[in-house]
Amino acid sequence: MLAGFGVIYLWEHLWDLPHSAALSAWLLLAITAGAAICSLIYERRLWCRYLCPIGGMNGMFAKLALLEVRSTQQVCGSQCSSFGCYKGSPATAVSFADALPREGQATGGCPLYSHPAQLQDNRDCVLCMTCLKACPHRSVQVNLRFPASDLLENHREFWAEAALLLLLLGGVFMHHDLQILTWFGWENWIIDSEHLGLGIPVVLLLLSAPALFIGLVHGLSYQIDPQMPRFLTLTYAYLPLTLATNLAHYIPAAVTEAGQILPVTARTLGFHDLNLPTLTASADVAAFLQGTALLAGLLFSLYPLLRISQRPWLSNLPHVFAMAMLTLVCAQLMF
Image (cartoon, rainbow, N blue to C red):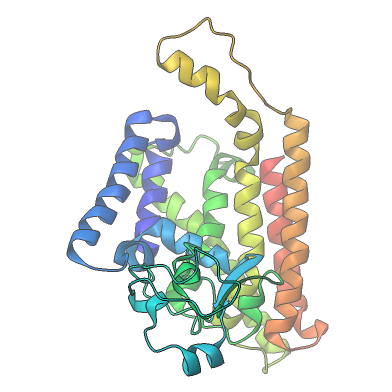
């Protein structure tokens, strides 16, 4: 997933993929082909769970979700023998007096091969509700919860996911490379597919800049407090900030361009005089939403930082400073 996202970033930026319909189509076809080929060879959405860069990003950000699908381990262990939610089963009779027609349905099992009683986070759940339809014991539930609760209790961490997190944060810097190069007086540095020898090193450096910066900050925090958790553990505290910065980057396109989909589609099909409606916001509204997203990402990252580290404020000051600096730099790049 990490390598796939890195390739997509290079392809996107050096070949200007967002402004090329043909290249955008090839990217969608590549992702679709990967899903189709893996589905023919393997079971249970291997592509989405283990290989797809977009699936890895969605699964990681799902840890911040307000919703979760879980089931009661005691009910599953004592009353269920078929495990239809997990392995698939035919329709099962429901013994509740107020049973609903949609309970105990025949299903093929969880597409990701995850049991709802054993889920420790949302990474391997796509909210397909197959387990909810299959369960005849009303053990499976859709719950509202505190965002980022996956990061605070029994969290499973691994390097590949943390590296993807830092890469996505670096992607924000990559998208604003011209501003950054201008800060250093390198505004004439050409970054495109015709100058790969110059462009690739710059893009890779910008993608890795947050990882290097946070690594240095963590080394400083460890010098202040040797009992601070390891770098891998604390990296997940930056997940809300990573989500917020990526959302902030795409907000202008969402509020100023997405509302033009009807007339743009009509013009693409050759209809130029239909006067179809548009729904767009001004640049000031986009800037306000960007600032709100960045501020919310900063504030929302502080609580997981303190909970994950289990250390006092003074020990966490270097990481608080790092989060504030990343937020300010992103704001400077976007406004």
